[in-house]
Amino acid sequence: MNFRLLAKILGLLLTLESVAMVACGVFANFDPNDELGVAVLPLMIAGGITFLAGIVLIIIGWGKFERIPRREGVMIVGLGWVLSGVFGAIPFVMAEPGLPPSAALFESVSGFTTTGSTVIADLEQWPDGILLWRSVTQWLGGLGILVLFVAILSAMGGGAKSLFRNESSFQPGEAATARIRDTALSLWKVYLFLTVCCLLGLRGLGMSWFDAVTHSFTTVATGGFSPHNESIGYFSGWETGLWIEIWLELFMLLGSTSFLIYVVIVRRDWERLKRQEEVRWYLLLALVGCLGVWAVGVWGGGHAVGQTLRGAVFTTISMISTSGFVTADYELWPVGTHFILLAMMLIGGCAGSTSGGMKVSRLILLLRAASQEIVKAFRPNQILRMQVNGNAIDDTARAQTVLFVALFSLMAMASMVVVAIIETAHGVDFESTIAIVLATFGNVGPGFGDVGPTDTFAELRPVTHLFLSLLMVLGRLELYAVLVLFVPAVWKKY
Image 1: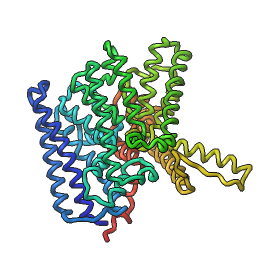
Image 2: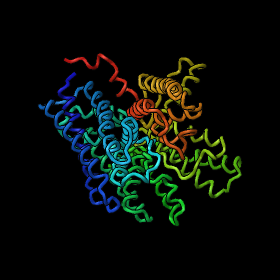
Image 3: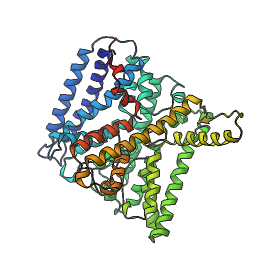
Image 4: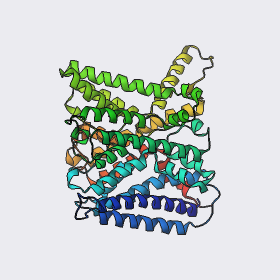
């Protein structure tokens, strides 16, 4: 393990994070709603601490490195997300009314992983500067702060590929079609463009600049943080409330669609665009989910057709994109809708998007693999080929997908047992235990039961907050880049 290389890259990453903190501090300094400057000092001090830590690491690792080996690349990704969450928690501890360290870490990690779960019971008590930082963490984590890192640092050379592939959920065959650094830069240009479009639309629909900025950051990132306790329900009673919801639905879908699609469109590679079947599957699943929730709500709950359709569409898109915005308390809906929404949460968006969940491409591959196994049961000698998005899927890729789903399921069940044991004295029920794990491990945000759309994770014990923080990072990095940190062999120096 080249520890000097690790120190240098992680130090550069922390300095980048410190710039974002200071920018939020500058905003807080000029915020007319924060006349006492409650948020300025915490953000500036946190930015200074983060910057100092980054400089120390850069000095320790000073030197020129031609490339980043694969092992170091995986370690940088795992440690980079952990350190981002740890230093990102400092403003939440220092600012009034303040959070305990474990809860602050949970809030920070929930932001960077775009999970959207929160431990803040009353957002109105917090200054706008801290709420802006809260949204910025999701925006930085949405496309992946390390993808931005790859785009900015041209000195990475061959190591960019290792970082890019381990940090994001892009499929190897797709990421290899152009230089990784150029692809990362193109992705961030698209990300910025979508954010600006979302922001200007929300501002045009009547939101204040602050609300438009914070919600555009968390919508395109499919994160779901809102500076209001009622989430998007805060705007639903407005004259433009419906149009705000429709605008957010559009950008939740755009954010949860593979960003490589937009790069393909910009490059006018129409043949490749035709092969991108995952997006068609995703939009079809979203449509079926919306209609299913609407139908069950109308026929099973006896609710008004129009109002039910409005709530069903927004909630379903919010869940399948793993954004976690809410406009209504869906726990009051018929039980049948809960199963549909749970399925949407587990599936998630497309690979290479800002969303969480299992990813639609894996669902396609699993269904096709199952279909082939059924055919082989009565035609064992037939040679069957499989493709997803026009890319040939070999036996290794298929085995990796099956292993991922099995490992994800096993870890989810084990985590439910851990949470149940820790929270037994607090009376957390069976439904809430399942929801707590799936909402964090799947990077969704709200769940059911004690962590439903009108509740928070504030009542959980500190050790549970720490455990769930690990689960959120595991879910965001799709297990392996974090699990490798617990393998002794990877730490051996050479």
